[in-house]
Image (cartoon, rainbow, N blue to C red; front, side):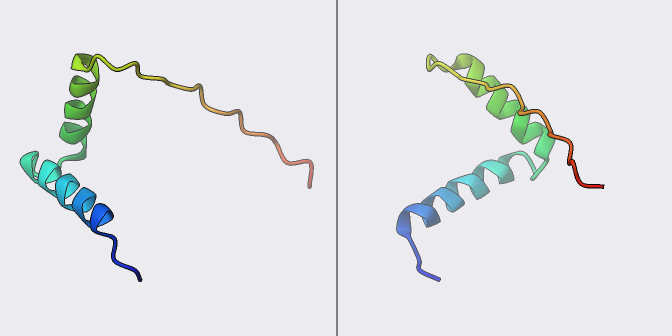
Length: 57
């Protein structure tokens, strides 16, 4: 696999961020939601796509 320094840096930052919260997914997500609220950037959410039922039986 090709090593990409940018991807490696992102992995390092993500690992450090997760470690701050003891790798607790709920705490990590809460932090991201809080950062999102404080950000002056516009956050876009798309509604989930409907699941189409299969016509095969």
